Image 1 (cartoon, rainbow, N blue to C red):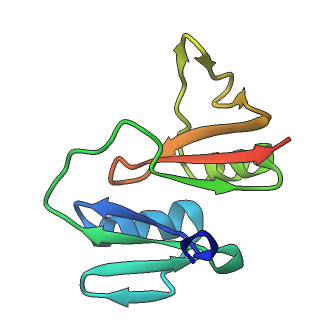
Image 2 (tube, rainbow, N blue to C red; image 1 turned 120 degrees about the vertical axis):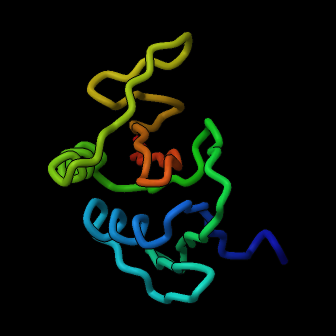
Amino acid sequence: MISQAIVGATLPAADLERAKRWYQEKLGLTPAREDPDALMYQTAEGTGFALFPTAITERAGHTQMAFEVSDVRAEVADLRSRGVVFEEYDQPGLKTVDGLVELGGSLGGWFKDSEGNLIAMFQRR
């Protein structure tokens, strides 16, 4: 049944080699598998995501992938030390403070990868 399926994200990359370097240098991730048309990454509990090459450079303005972590403040500090920039928002219903916001019982924030994909990182409270 589909309700029991493992789900993963698929993110576009205008420059797959640049994206591969960014995910290695900034997030410390290496592909579990590399194909000419995709890089596959594995994360915890059978989850993962893929990057695929595309000539389309427009990106969605919403979260495209999210990492759930046990200590978001520590992860944010680590990623910032690697040069990752967290987004700041100040709009009705959403105001980040130092890149983080509390929403629906979670604490989290957003950053963009080398390809402009918006990625969330959050911790359940």
